Structures are given as C-alpha cells and as structure tokens.
Image (tube, rainbow, N blue to C red; front, side, top):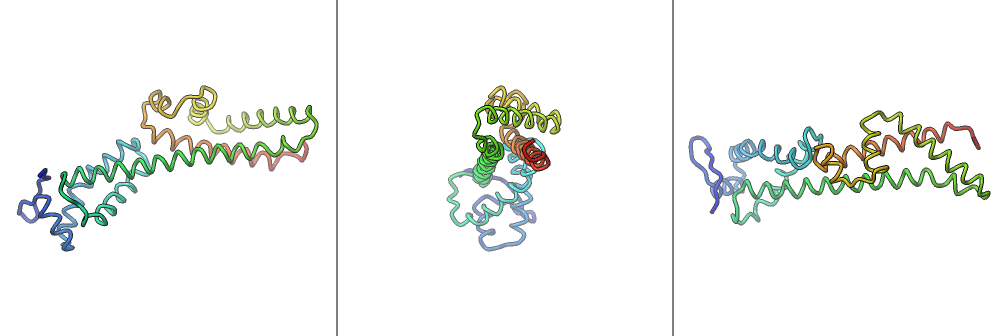
Length: 203
C-alpha cells in the first residue's frame, strides 16, 4: 500500500488511519488533510490550467469538496495524494472543455450578429457591398481591442493555428489560450454589436 506520511498531534498517520478519522468526521483530521495537500493540489491546478489562472483556486477547492464526497468509495489502490491528483486532473480538464465550448459559442454568436444584414439584401451588388462594410467594421472594432487580443485572434483566424500551436508559440498552457480567446471573442462581439446599433440605418 502506498502511503503519504503525516502526523496529527505528534502521532504518525498513514492513509488508512487518516481516512478512518475523516469518515468519523474528526475536525482535526479534516484540518490536517486540507493543510497537508492544499498547496500540492493548487500547484497541480496552476500547472494544468496556466500560470495565474483565475480559476485555479476555485478548482482546487472543488477537488477537496469532491474528495470528501467520494471518500467512502476510496479503495487504497493508490496514495491519497495520487487519488486527489486524479480528481484534480478530471476537474481541470472539465474546466478546459467548458472554455472550449465558450470559445465556440462566442464564434457562433459573432457570426450570427454579422449574417442577417447581408441576408436582407436582395440585390447582389448591395449584398456584396454590405458584406464588405461588415468586414471593414469588424476590422475596425478589432483594432480597438488592443495588441494582445489582436495578435491572438490573428493566430487563430488569419493564420488558422490550432489551440495547441498557439499555446506552443506563446509558451502558455492550452487552457490559458482558450480562456484568453473566449474573453477576446466576447469583447469583439460586444464592440461589433454596439457599432451596428449606433450605425445610421441603411448606412
């Protein structure tokens, strides 16, 4: 059996003894468990999600909440730490998958905001002219985003780089890339919709 060493009021504890105390709702055991593993789990979240990721602290807390809930099912096939780490990996990748869905949703909403105006034009020439104005409008609004978002959107859209390729170029985790892209897409969508609303009707 793998063990994570520890002490509780001077007494050495192995995983089985710690789990027994946790299941008995021993307050000192709860504090010991949390204080022993919180830094390791937080560092694992930072490694998987990205440096200074705002979600890292929240996911670390979720790991312990999930662990306490699933503790009666722990079978000692690994150490407590490795069990916690597997929970951590699962929750981090769930967060990354959620970000990927947010990026896709932002892209779809932006496309939906741009389509109706062109579709309303019956005349081919007017339709093409409107499309061109929309392209220029989006370009103009993109310049208002600032350099970080402009470069990131250029890598993703103009150069058609994958999330993994962008992560490699920027030397940041893929989770950070998706988080930044989601924020940039949302900001661009807001700017485009605002510009459309302020633009003179038919102009």
